[in-house]
Image (cartoon, rainbow, N blue to C red; front, side, top):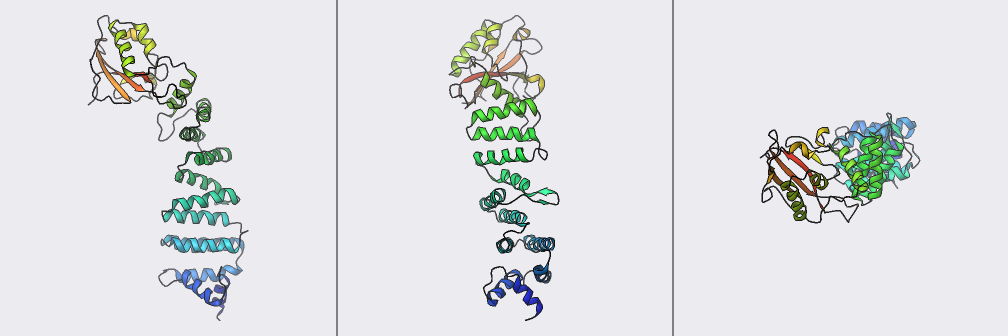
Length: 347
């Protein structure tokens, strides 16, 4: 047998005989592989290579398969390397490559199993200055939807890699994960940390700061401005408008997150969240309101057109909504007067 075939025989990771080795060789160096000569040469060099050289060879060979979309061959090859040398220092990286290959096969659930095994069973490893555990946690947070598992991964990310992440973003997203898991006490505690120490914008959540503040404030407030039914709330508001009772209007409005703004403004702009002074908008005449709600109203929110305010802003739409606060079932789903829109409604 030529020396090349002998060396190829030595790297057949699961061969029980020369025949099975030949099958293995044919599988990894098949005729359709454009770089089969290069792969054959690299496999021949593997047995006598140093640790670093073996890593480079495995990377090159598996990378060749992955480049051509031969994910099954890459997975088989990398799995064989790990099985033949379970203490190989670079197995952590090979496991990550296997997980990536499964995502290429649209087998995300299997990829998640490998990424989770990396965290629980394999030591962390730096490759080109990048932590494999860090990469695995980031990928798991992209693939896993179950909130309890996301909480586990995100807490691990925050505790182990605080210098590599935006802590504000991760604390806010951790709070959202706790919400989805129904762990409201934990969510509110995380939001408090976010507000106190990492009060900043969160990509994809432009309302993050106000959202967290509203939940924390809502939890600590009496909520005596809320009503079981929209009809009852509307009756009180209409009576206060008809009698121009500024004090009563102030009692009826929401005490958390009440906004007053133009239709084109964003609720998160600083001047939209303010202590609204009704007396400044009542010019002295009667305030009128529509007999029925605006057509844009639905089961979760409602708009009531009113007019007769100041010359500068004669028309306002009063905005009502159901409270979304599962942390307190007593108030979740009750109605509140949440804000005011200045001017005619945009079409």
